[in-house]
Image (cartoon, rainbow, N blue to C red):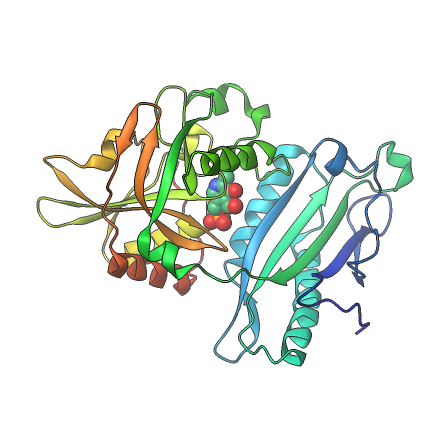
Length: 337
Ligand code: PLP
């Protein structure tokens, strides 16, 4: 393996390059993360025209780094590519590139004495440079593995203060206007990042988007989950309805599969902020934002858009139970309709 000195200071990079003009064959090669690899005319940069996936690699029992929910991430990537009509490498090419990048990452982690290093695995594909002749075959694609940020146990114990922000689209927009690509993981995340900055300026930790007609949607980088118990003591796990234009969370799907196996009932919205208060028929046990790298983060308060819920239940034991389902890494089940 060539030493491109990836590790704590530089991510491990593997480039996937179209082998010919057909887009069906790709070559996989390590590259130097400190050298330029992407042309400034790449439409991923000039227009945010591309897609990505972010997954977490953790050591398995034998100490080998393994990407959690890899197949679910590859499936969602293929869905995003279809929505964007973007030629991307096939699943086998991605798997080969990930394996190469993880090998480099693990070698450097071992050399640095870190035996339990966790990696963030980011897959990216763009439409490539314009005009297209600059790179026959079009798209650029690569895999980056970098050290996972340390978890924040204090914030997890305390729970997030979340700001409810209007996404400006109604809950039917995704159906009426599929070019909004609300269900694809595109590179155009400037809006999501702006929402998070806005929340932090307001003293909040995170965001829950709400549709223009008042339905709960998702976080800028996470899926929302709600746990409740009915009067008969039956537990239910609910997530907002996907048809309203939210990303299909791979973590949500795995948590749901684990919860269902453990006897929970599952629900797929629609949800409105008042549902977080519970009522005569059901008691709310917790609300979480969940994503691949950060895992499950409880939400302790929610305000904005005329809603003020100063205190939501934060139950560390229940968070640990749901984390257990997430770690089981069962094959992704249905995401809901
Ligand atoms: N929703 C959005 C908009 C996201 O960006 C993400 C992840 O980054 C998620 C949900 C959670 O997806 P996953 O659980 O697959 O990481």
